[in-house]
Figure (cartoon, helix red, strand yellow):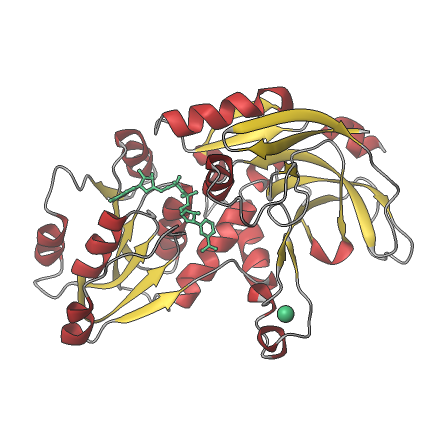
Length: 347
Ligand SMILES: NC(=O)c1ccc[n+]([C@@H]2O[C@H](COP(=O)([O-])OP(=O)(O)OC[C@H]3O[C@@H](n4cnc5c(N)ncnc54)[C@H](O)[C@@H]3O)[C@@H](O)[C@H]2O)c1
Ligand SMILES: [Zn+2]
């Protein structure tokens, strides 16, 4: 038996004991140590993803933990190993997979959305999803590897280069991680964010953050860039207003990288795309090389993951943490501690 945090219906989570069984061939049983609550988990909690999620659904896909048991035929992993999980399972046969884009397989199983996630005391996953963590990396920080891998992928998709001027619209965890990863590649970054708390945190990390309700963002960008406009903008807010800002700040031949999930179609100023020869690039998830780079960036402190962790709650407190996250913008990342990291290490 394992205790799990489950989504049952819009705005309702419960904590329930569920059956576990020994890991099968090619599988590994993990003891999750920390699991992050992400913007996508909140979309599920709101009921926005009911068409996709079958209930009751165990949530969680940003995690760190330890191997407890390995199934038959699994090589290279031992109980106690510190790991994170790249939570994707693909069919390897669809046109997307055959053209080398397994991470956006046309039949992708995103573990934690389409199948049971990590917010439980024991979690069985395919061994192929495991990513090794350096022993020196504390497991709470390692829970931020997955969103950092998103940021690494996005910065790569946008082709950010040294010296480019870029604007990140939406300074939540993903937006701030994009800003940090891009800064490490030499970009000059501005973050646009509504929440004063999140702007302050971005500034403490050495970023410049603007309040779009207080300043004229396109005007500031014109001054900053000598009337040229930004080279790159990232839309990470998921809001209609954020889309407008991201389009308006771009200069000639600018690239707009779309990261946020927009639950409905948005109006967009296409004339601007014509006039300035802009490019729109979608960015979804990550591949293994993004994940491995993310482990390095978190481990060497380029991404100071510990600064993004606002709070750590127990499994039992997870439902109220979801409610708190949606009620206030005064937090960045909340981690759920699944309880028995020490026991996992000894198993
Ligand atoms: N592409 C992917 O693979 C991928 C992966 C993870 C998350 N996401 C999506 O990326 C988005 C960001 O994730 P997150 O966890 O940081 O979410 P989040 O909701 O915590 O952050 C969004 C931020 O945007 C800010 N915001 C809202 N409207 C704004 C506006 N008009 N101007 C400026 N800022 C505004 C909010 O205050 C908030 O801080 C979500 O939509 C999430 O679902 C996409
Ligand atoms: Zn496929």
